[in-house]
Length: 515
Figure 1 (cartoon, rainbow, N blue to C red):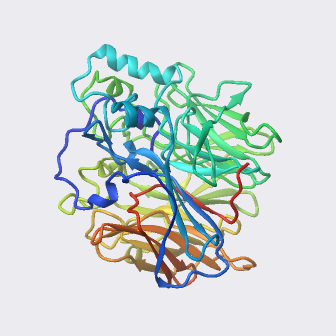
Figure 2 (cartoon, rainbow, N blue to C red):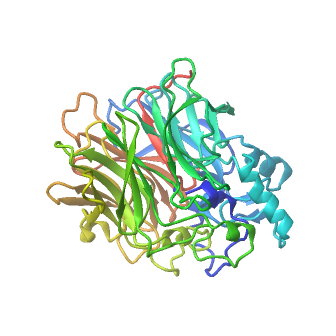
Figure 3 (tube, one colour):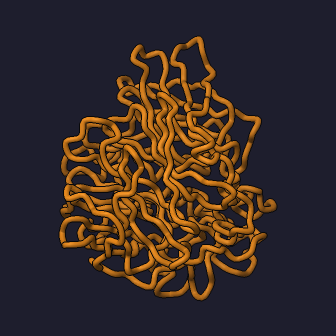
């Protein structure tokens, strides 16, 4: 979550604190140490016998450096959590840090090697030369490598931990969570030093992602495949290079959509604010991005059969995550279902002195929405409409999950029973007939990203489980919840003997083997 890193990771000037200390301390506290295969306790219900494999999740696990607390949820140093089902009589939980240069400096030298999203390298004011030096780290390909956003497994078993910088991609052991090495990306052309942390399967065993070049007059978005060449999972093959609408200020890219026929990249009106990153201007409202509400979203649609692209526009909105995308049967349009905000206020809402603070502002509104993109040359404007029911979602939707093999109608996400400053329920939305259901977590608890797990042999889209981690502040503890994906009825609660901090993105893998 949140995993939003990219140049957010490079903010030079901290945001001035306006809020009291959070009232959800255990959710945003460093873990006490690494641990492996610690037995968990099934505190309610029964774990289905067919559930065998690993839930692997990435997120922040260390929030302090040299006695100093980091400022933002995205600043915490990457910690991989794994819950194993089926290897023992009860599930087993493990946690290890990703041994990046950023983490190593913080843990062994008690200092920051790189500025992170909301925390500068020094408590003291930095001179303009040091700010320029930090910015040049990005251009030279040496930004932070704190890989705390996501984790994916390539064909062949290589497990990656990722953030939104190219060098912040690491190979880790899915069995032990040990960091193996920095993933050695190669390519015939420069893909940029930045990337999304949400690569998408290409349907043939490879992955698609977007790199961004920044800091030159040729700023562009470079769409590429990787993991598709046998024996060379690190090789990236360019699909299309799309010039940024404003080359000197490329727009922030967090996620994108892929269908059988198209790749959809959305340039939302949120450019990187380079002067603010250098400290030349006063701190902007949304950290190191600007918000240009009078500009449209620019939507680039790449035809996967020709690798050519066309561009449409849509009204301005802000988003982190996409639930799914589908092509119309007649080829006349593409639907992209995503969690849309009116502006980036959610960025400010995730500073550690605000997130979860019961006396702070409420969660910003976000809606599960459908972006309908016409493909005909005569139409340039896409439309956006809401899909969720505010009575169920509470006017908040993010961390969407779908049955990736059969997505047609169901989206599971976090929602909010308001008033609240954090998500506190899981919502199921039927985007075809408008039906909704929800499951409220216990009082003063925070659910993480839901993950859909299909039941072996399932034939319907919602036949399976919804798995998610929950931080319970009343007991300063963490649990894994399992819900029936169709009904949202509780199937099991599994308590961890170690408190786990709030995390970002994860996946369930039905087997566990090292490459």
